[in-house]
Image (cartoon, rainbow, N blue to C red; front, top):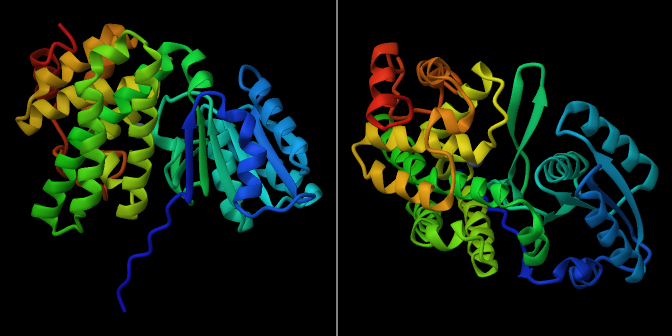
Length: 352
Ligand code: ZN
């Protein structure tokens, strides 16, 4: 029998000051007073938000404890599993930009518990997706887990995070333009399952960000909500598709390849954005429109702005198709030759 199960978040709360109401949301979701809840946060900037969540839970009568995460690695994953053995939580809450949410997602999945996502920045679509990235010796691995039962996104908190994080989230979202094209290609050439609805949802998020790029670039508070909603919509797209297909194609393969060949501090969405310009060129689409949107946002569009060399871009382009061989994209099975990679990067202005 064939079936397609879809797990989606049950409750989404986006607004100013909503971080204070995490405790109340837990009660509304049916978790009873006295239940034990484990909160995970970063150990620097996001720790104070972890403490706000902790207080909100205690005010609502929960038995809450806080554990800090320095990176999304097996070490911290194990650390949380042993913390969970001690406090026996009924729920895990991840408060942070990415790492704490990743570990909350993976550990709750492993323990058969639910988790709530409380993003403190909007730098990538992991805040609402069923997938988590975990670092090991071979680099970052994307693992299938489950989506949050609820997302509580405080606009004030996310607005006060550095603008660069928000802009990076937009780069991740604009990458859906090429991800969906890659998916359509894999459907046509490989007979891969293609979900029109989830593809449209991912594209809708990308279109919203492209349309509002200038406003978001000015870092207006109103535009923070647009980005959060677009990221959540990408998470839904992945949950509905049952894979990251609508949200991750050749532009993500380029981003991961670049992380392997370069020590750049560029953020995930920054690398994805530059990758999307080049992949859109290969697809024959409106790569200039995409680049203009990134420029309006204040996002990097060149190797120099990413802090990488021309050689690293070329190397990453030629390596990208090997990152995830089962994921068919515009790069094909054989990838791109160094000469074609150089021409592509020059043609799109990524290198001179
Ligand atoms: Zn991404």
